[in-house]
Image (cartoon, rainbow, N blue to C red; front, side, top):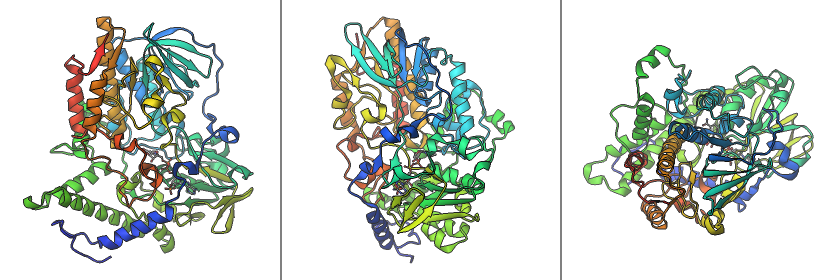
Amino acid sequence: MTTTTTEGSGATSPAVDKAVLLAKYIAERDKRLRPDGNAQYLQLKGQLAHYLEDPYTPFVEREPKTDHVTFAFVGGGFAGLVTGARLIEAGVTDVRIIEKGGDFGGTWYWNRYPGAQCDTASMIYMPLLEETGHMPTEKYAHAPEILEQCQRIGRQYGLYDNALFHTEVEDLSWNDATSRWVIRTNRGDAFTADFIGLGTGPLHVPKLPGIPGIERFKGHAFHTSRWDYGYTGGDPKGAPMVKLADKRVAIIGTGATAVQCVPHLARACKELLVFQRTPSSVDVRANAPIDPEWFADIATPGWQQRWLENFTANQAGGTADVDLVQDGWTDLSRRIRAKISQLPREDMTPQKMLAAYEDSDFEKMNEIRARIDSIVEDHDTAQKLKAWYRQLCKRPCFHDAYLQAFNTPGTKLIDTDGKGVERITEAGLVVAGVEYPVDCIIYASGFEVGTEYKRRAGFDLTGRDGLKLSQVWADGMKTKHGIHVHGFPNAFFVQPTQGANLISNVPHNLTEGGQTIAAVVRHAVTKGYKQVEVTQEAQNAWVELLLTGFGRMTGAPDCTPGYYNNEGLAPGPGARLAVGYPAGATAYFKYIDAWRTSGAFEGLAFR
Ligand code: NDP
């Protein structure tokens, strides 16, 4: 790359020829574009349904529930736990969480693959640390500790007593005459609730790549979110996977999951073949233990809220003098801000600010690519591990052992030049006409994202007058605050979109959502209201406000395909609504705090 001036940006020029780089990005994108988009993936049903079986907790028979609870929540991950906790604090004691897994934890229940750990610093990622008195042991905690935190919340707030595990909701219908929801499940339950919450998570339905011949493979196979320790040996806490010592193993996929488990597989397998379609960008992780003395000093009352606010201010549109968290996300934002602030005052135009933002991204990605050359010994492998796209085209990854794993004897990258695995045979995998026989295939192929809500959730909602949520949201999500939907009284969604939409730290969105819902429910219950519903006008006004924003920050037109950009196909009608509060996450959290503490709950009608 040559050094050139960035045309018109006025910013210090990066050591990069932007035109050449962009042409490379576009060529790499074009290699991967395919007309079938999300349809390239296989839904795990019929012959493939066994990939969904729970390897972690035995199934226990129980009698169906036909009783009544004040609040029923679908999903026992962070969303359900934090909402449940806030409801209990607000005096709503009969909260029933319904969860398809065998325990609380959601994503952390299922994802027990070796090396799984949070990508956002534990101090802000793990919910209710202050309430539970838990000190994270590492800057980026590993999965077993996060699962234990979920269980701790469940125990502390008494959420286990009423929970239904290994239970999938099949139908939720509103009965206007009784002002209650009727909840039906795959375990024969048919119970009622005054209020319902929905926190099913964005990435919980595993998918397989639609590789021809996938069902023919005669060896062992599993998806990373159903890790088969019976086959591999070892355990989620890091015990070595001794049973792989004589095995030739293939892993398909090189996303955030593979980046974390490949180093462990490389250590354990006789041979490991990593099948790559698109490389991830892998930046420095710098994990470290948390020092109890340091923690005791900083953990004064209100500490976690201060840390949350500080991270959001550094990361998403606020201002902060210090950066308490100091991770890859805040680094990214700091660099962008620094680039923009270098612009002369008269150059602070949207166009030039965007160009400065691009410069910062090109520089960052060049650093990430250069890091590969400095770590990976085999030149050819190093070149193939380089990601040729902007950092936010795909989920940025951070790891200090992934690239090094390719220096392990027996670990080999099988790059498919953007085409993916060609075929699966009875004995192994075929790429560019070459068959690679293996004992086991591990699918690190991710989760359904672009499919419709009803398919992912496993149910539709029937609101007032038989209104279906799938119809109301056919052209995209419509809510107030991402929580309330007109036509669906006493129902609350707990997720980031149309609220703060803080993707770098999803739990912050959820804890705020839980607090907001608890305040609304407490108001309804103490005043004796039977129903609470957002008015059509308030919902319309919120949606109009959302549409005044910049739109999505991910998925530029030159991005390589992935779930961030609808697999490279034209965005569906709902994409413009998959956004957050236009003024940014910091402003949203301030706004929602004022909204719920004022007691007026503007936009909601209580009856
Ligand atoms: P991803 O969807 O990110 O990755 C799937 C991988 O499978 C991609 O590398 C994809 O390639 C590859 N693939 C798909 N089809 C084929 C094919 N036919 N042949 C070869 N390769 C194929 O799934 P992950 O499970 O890695 O991650 C999902 C998300 O979960 C992350 O983005 C992140 O949000 C979250 N996560 C978070 C973690 C954390 O916070 N600690 C850790 C792990 C995951 P291509 O890129 O070309 O589509």
